[in-house]
Image 1 (spheres, rainbow, N blue to C red):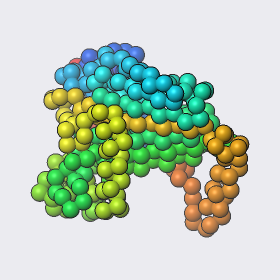
Image 2 (cartoon, helix red, strand yellow):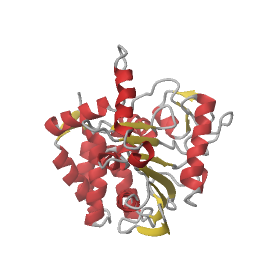
Image 3 (tube, rainbow, N blue to C red):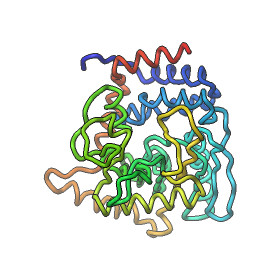
Image 4 (spheres, rainbow, N blue to C red):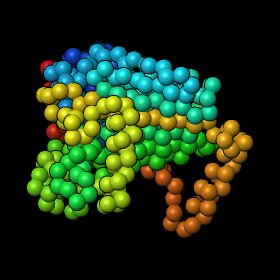
Length: 336
């Protein structure tokens, strides 16, 4: 790729840690954030990877995100809990939510953790894939700053509100599904805007509600929901479960993930986890394989997540490719 550079996952991780620590993030938290961003790059989810570092660093330096905040778990009893991120980065709060869910599932076949006062949460399936590795079904969702207008409207009210699903498999990597409620993740448009590239028709609208292929105009406008009107209703469902349930900000109340100044975004997330054994009398694994085999039996059909696994293997071996301009910007930030 022209005007690009390849770096190892370890070198990218170390560079991100240096940048965040230099921009007022605690070293232990910088490690968690870097791990998440590098994992996104490894899965070729570049909109949630290294391209986020400049905005993360700027927000930590300005105090819009508290780079030293420690998340707090509030036990609701039974299978429920709330994690308060205290305006810090999302990844430490997500790690605490995962730990809490594992504890809850020892005494309940279903558990839920709501996360409040949080920040950009990256690749949503990464929150739950470790739970599926442990044998649990898991669902994750989150809201964020306004990016999608209600169907028929022209002003953004809701975030892109991604949903992730993960299910354990006995002798294979978990089945993982990850989807934004917009036609594409907004991070992809941010990558295009950074590179000065155009975007395909149908992805987004400009600030006046007109369709646009200009990535910068799209960043100032709104995203097209997947599935049109039906997708817009799914966006609202996630907004309620992630934002209202956690008493966090709605998309139209939340500040930008890309700008350094302003109030903390105070977004919300919800992670559900289920022990499939009791519900299925131990037959979940075999039944799951039956339906997956039926999918694979159809010529041309494939299971979701295979591209992610292929990319993960390739980047572990070969490293990741970054635009030269972004890499230069990262090196400059590391010296700030």
